[in-house]
Length: 88
Image (cartoon, rainbow, N blue to C red; front, top):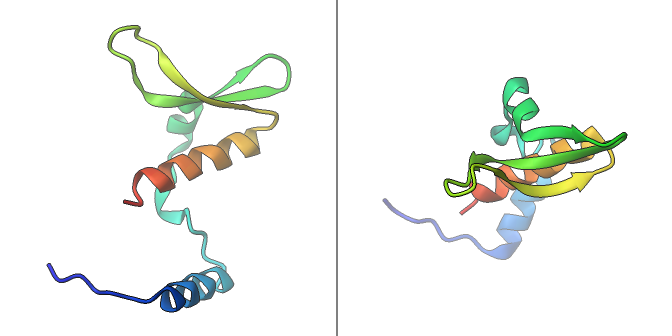
């Protein structure tokens, strides 16, 4: 497998072009509604919490990945997590 080297300016240009075209940087990392309901849960009156997909084998619980005031913010955080997990 050949690796292609690109400069930082080429990378910046490619990113700005993709964003200007209206493409979402997270488009390839979206989950189904059923998976989102399992990962994002409502806690309290107006709070949503993002949990990990995998359970800890010792405790049987999922890891807390953050609490947010809106479901939209929780979904954004979950998409960020998926993006960075697959980035490298």
